Image (cartoon, rainbow, N blue to C red; front, side, top):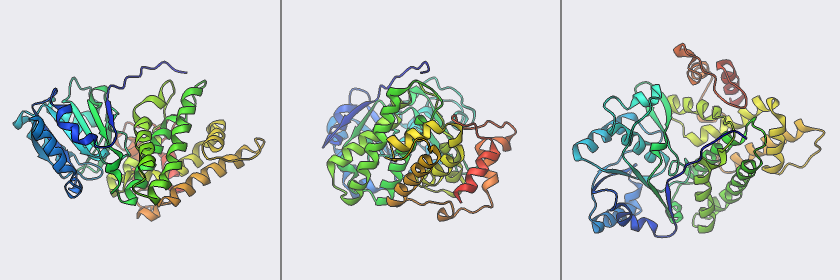
Length: 392
């Protein structure tokens, strides 16, 4: 086990009706907030009215900025930065899923920075401070409600970069699983895939003697896979949504990655799909993850046997590890298909014409400073290209 520091200050307020307390929860921390949200679904469901009523009742003033899209855009975040500065906003309240929260975090650090907020994403500049962020979660998926990570898309440059800092962990996050009832099935599938990928990126490691976090990873994955079909069958299965929602938070708040080297190869590869083709992040991960597993398993077959047996329930002879691993990968692919995910890049409308470009961008080779991605196996641009081709 490697040295680690685990710090997760995000306060999680969980359960029925908790969104109605947001005004009183925020009152000690802010006089004026930015209410940040997406395409308007929170108004159709009545959530917007309940949040506004709670803020008004608590005497918390607000300005608002909607319009966040999946794969959140830099230009909208820059608009939010200008708005917060003009209005002297103290805190950003993100009402939505991972895209809204990531956009809110971008705004939060941009307000406190004199230059272009894109510098942080492109150059990895450390931030000295950021406005506090609070969350009302409407889509369990990204785990951004408890993480210090944010991802933004520069639409002018067709680049999608991530950034992380402890200063970006939300002050508090409200999670009422009842708010998930109206989610379309494709969003449910994408969310489930994303949270599973957050665990995979930590689970598949060459670090030894990490029995505790191995078990945590496996439990989170089994919990997600058990409850995903339940919520797809019955959108108002509260107990199943509780399991899914809490699992998504645990998957990305840092706990399951403690003491172990991490990978993040699939996320880096998928960001290129989203940046160029604007595909849903979860759908891209569903296609790339089995292809990545097929390409890298020989570098640590014991880890993939463990996954196949303890997560996917494969039963076979340990004298035939390749057969066990292959069946485990196929079972994962079948699970993704069963919840409505695509199995190939072709199904996403992606052909061969830009695969090499994406591979070179994913590893920064095209910028003249190649940085191999991945932890379990270092992936250079030729490796990434091979995985993209396996995923066709």
